[in-house]
Length: 181
Image (cartoon, rainbow, N blue to C red; front, side, top):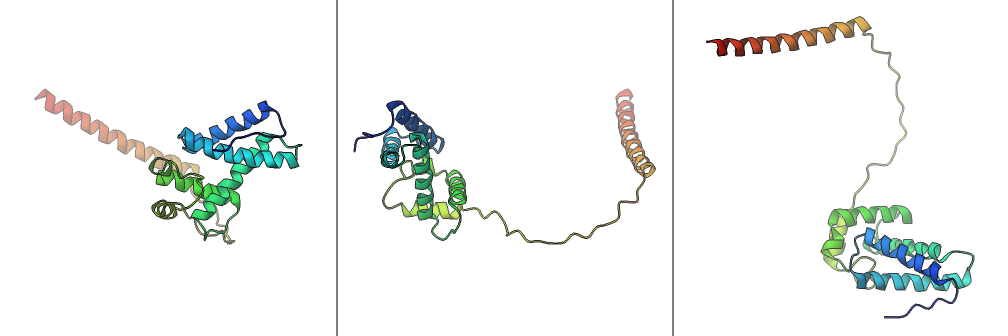
């Protein structure tokens, strides 16, 4: 495993980035500490290289950008035919991960480098959700308001109450008659 020795930034800033990445991975179901550490060190090394070029950005910000890019690239490997923005791709991927119960079935696959297991890819693609048809512009024809008046409404409500209570009253009357005999 390679070490992590950033040339810029403070230890507190890099620790904050580490802890945030750890929480982020845990939220995605990565519970293996070894797998978490491998991913985190890979991302932090990339963020440290970028921090040398742009020290005005916080290490935490650069580390989070790295994990977002890593996720978008990783999900693109799973859904190569999906042409969507990185944010949409990650959303689709997260939903598929959850529906496939992927982090429990394949605990060391999330953000792994190298070849992905074919059964994992197939399961993820099968759980891919299509949100629905594309939005189409249509017209809505205005209709006149319902001609029913308040008195019609009250009359209908009174009839329903009358039916309800008369049925209840008859039911109780029958029960009382059966008990009296």
